[in-house]
Image 1 (cartoon, helix red, strand yellow):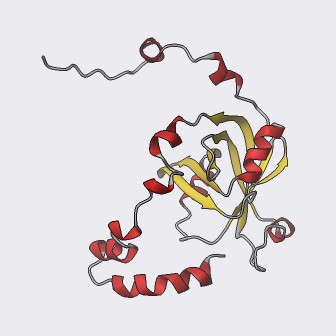
Image 2 (image 1 turned 180 degrees about the vertical axis):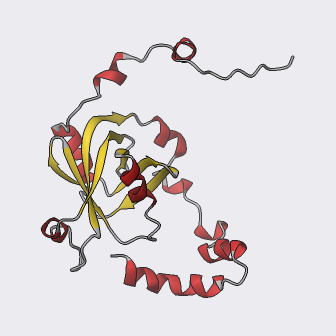
Length: 206
């Protein structure tokens, strides 16, 4: 018997298929940073920043020492924008559209923390200096205004075994960065790029 394909295109169809949200899924959502959510942010060394703009969507990983995203008050987060590849995809999007989302992850912890709101790109030398690492300042600060914040349950990380050491794969099982670039740009010296990368990383991490 052939299977049918249906595109769900209305909220009514979506609710009929999945059912109503359990009360616990809704009760955890706040419009401010609670003490419990502050603790999760301050323990997190990694966050994913999602933005949208005229060029489309973007999802960018950001990481540093735990607590690198600073809780300024119960409605505001400060995220240092450190040296990267200079594509500036997230920042270009924020110029177009201030809406943004954050997904915080904590090594070894199954729950993640989701934050939705608006973000601005700030230049403030004193503020940037307060985020300095090894004397190097972030280029700018992303000031994030919280509209909604809530934790996500463990299911995704448990299913993925993300923190399970036995689930790790060796990096050699995947093509190297140099190999991938050379496949796109034939005259690129991928072997030299890979060979020099460890030292380049040390020199440019901040």
